[in-house]
Length: 275
Image: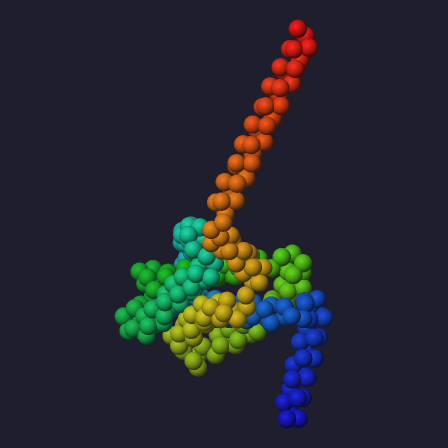
């Protein structure tokens, strides 16, 4: 019991200190930290993959083709962004997270499998521009880094207003540095872990983003949005709306008739006095 009380007091002290340091409301701190956890997963996967793309290029198509690979990655990223822009008008941001994380997670899982193949993978020592795996891996990593981070900040901006962002964004970025540390640490041990295994780890991190987004919406709710939804639902389901509108219309017609009658009476009286 003493250990439990001590732990709860320590957690409360840390939470209070973080809330005061970053000027985040105490009750909003878990939500902000969850945003940091999501960004941390994104950054961890990206740092790991970004550290692996140059060795993949060097061992497949040749490091001298890196400038061409960057040019192709710009074009491919632009094409993917066009598809992403279309999806933003069709699906919600949480669904878009599931689509993007599922797509890139599957791509990197396939790349991990191909890296172990003796013909297409790193076992093939024939280096040249015909090795499609190097081009695909480089362009996929570049597109993931550009798209997923932008999607996260778009999602965060849609939830937090300017006042909340002043303190929350600093805490989110500070928490995300844990992901950078994890990703870079794994990349420095590529010789022991293996390139293919690191791609599998990065795929798991990317798939976990979709899970974290689902957990976020199950754990935290936007009470203002929920209240507005309930209000709209209650109005739409109210069967007395049409009678009220009809009553208002009838009253307006009655007032209009009274105005016409008054105008006609005044005109008749004026003509009578003139005669």
